[in-house]
Image (cartoon, rainbow, N blue to C red):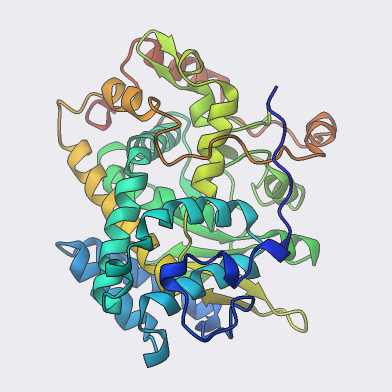
Length: 411
């Protein structure tokens, strides 16, 4: 049995961990410096960023996407060099106390210690960094694409009239959903803001609903029946609280990328490759590794609740996180567009390739330390099962066993 990794302390997340090639001469290595992040009220920030993402999806190449990102970031002169950009990246990881993300990001940027890369101008540095980031993470595209296809199929077969993406993590499914929705079922998307600090402070979730292509508006309709909530996983602590508050309107479902809760289905848990279940190729521990890795992907923003008011703010990510996140979404959208229109794009082949070479791929070498209260949480689960209807699950399993599930062109 693999022993859990020791928990990291914030003492190790300091400037002295930044690769030598990127340290600014004469600066204090133990300090990550002041923050220059852009902070905006969430009610205006999310609709504006959704519009920016839509704009980027129509661009022809990474250079153009990075250009739009730089317009949004408006980096000051002292931020426009690789050393400052990387320092801001590690500072944000420290601020979020994201030890796992720090470990993954450190490994990802190990190849960027080349002094020649460190001397590039900010724009060229970000373009090269985004290219390498996508190259290291693109093996996740087939799985994310098929997860989105399966979610839309849930809506079509189980008569779900709306998909709700739980931000921040579930934003990763959005590009594929946009591509596949016209082919499988036309359902509206909502973006739901509900974090642990919001839950702990007793605040209600915020919902932003579609109001025309690429336009989001704050919605007062929190409780909606016949909905499907998407998130990455694993246990559903926020889902349980949402259900307790009546968020599902008494008749909703949840679909995780990977689940450790028997009351919530997970795409990787139920996936079949032809006649062979995925757990014959990827053990449960590795399914958890996939979920942990997806959750450790760089994020374009972070939510910042104001302790003295009901306001919630969104802080734009550092330059590297924002650019890499947007380029990842753009690249996934391009992948899904090709996959959805290519009849020879056999899901079995792509999914098999995605589950091979786990150590060589950009995945955590082992799952992050297990949640110490997981067993008690699952044992005391008092919410109703948030699974899809049993008739759909039976139908889905038959399709998966036949090696037919996941093809958008066949519905």
